[in-house]
Length: 82
Length: 439
Image 1 (cartoon, one colour):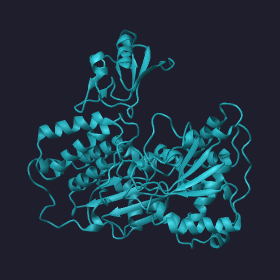
Image 2 (image 1 turned 180 degrees about the horizontal axis):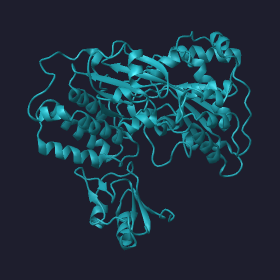
Image 3 (image 1 turned 90 degrees about the vertical axis):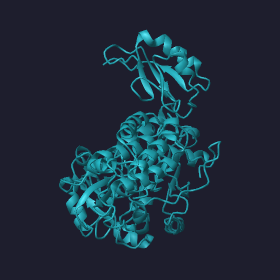
Image 4 (image 1 turned 180 degrees about the vertical axis):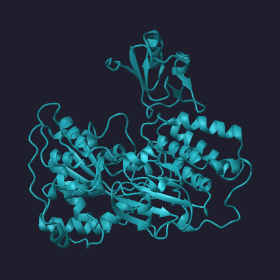
């Protein structure tokens, strides 16, 4: 699992936890980025519903959003650099 | 000092007028600039009493800004005000007590808030079956007869469920009749029927009604500098006279307990803030000042200003187990980590309370508590996880005893009703699968 505390985030991977049904396809698409908890629901890097994504993980994150059958995942612009 | 919120006064409009005078005429909102009270509320330093203690003036400004963003105010962007007296925290009774004595102060506050944000619709929400319904129906009738209100106030009674008092759930219910939390829009952005919605706790509104009359400088002469004014504290558990007291923020826990007749014995720990709050160990906590920052620095959460003392006649782990199970049942069932995580955690705590738990189980429980935090559409899973994790820390000696098959309380004295944390009866009708009427 890659976190982006040191490098500039390329995007934010945002999960709508109400929409999420725990189908697990995001984990299949990006297993190194998204883990599943013991109930089958996705755990993003950092453990909340919004994760900073490094450029090297951007393609995997995009695959995960495309894999979600209920459109619970999407990519947002990164927060402005400070 | 005498209370400001009139807990000892009769509830009629005439008595209210005698004591406080009429609500002054407030400047109307003009375009993107808020009217009414926003500057005075900022000067007062008022912070929301529903549990978050968020600065009220920021919320007022956010609603005005949100409704003005797309240019001219259209019908679909006109703000809505909702007074929140749902009192979803079972251990709290402050809103009920406030409404019984001073309903017109709360209703005045709704008027003041509505004029500040330019709202055209206003609501006051109490939970279905609430004892406040009668007094509010009478108060609203008195106001209609006396033509007091510029913006009509509608009394609404959403289901008596824990998460239905959360502000997005309340907006959802007022707009669409569905009492479940909404994600990710906050009510000030898109609330009831998609309109910018101001949700304020009933006590906050009563304070606003006082600020409207006396000004922000007057208001902040009392209480802690970081959160001025008074607060209604619900005190329960191991005290001689459990009840509601109004004290200036920053009053010491010891002084609050003294107002309630003092502790019934040595206090092992306190539940602060409610079932979405946090436990603190008893030693030293009575010196802490009761304001949001001081309580947080001491490891607690002031929340809805609940202070519950656990003395040596009560096993805190049994209390935690009952409450955790109830909180798990109060999930709206919308998010996986809440729907599945909370019952799992509640089962763990129950096993611990029953002394049928072990070290590997504890380790797994701590992992689960970390895992379910921060992953819900509302803060229900986070609050429940905090309730359990802070309890395990505050009563680590009792946890160790239980893992060893013992309990410091068993065989000493049974828990009396007065000392048991209140857990409402479990409702056997679950939410229907479509999430329609959440009751």
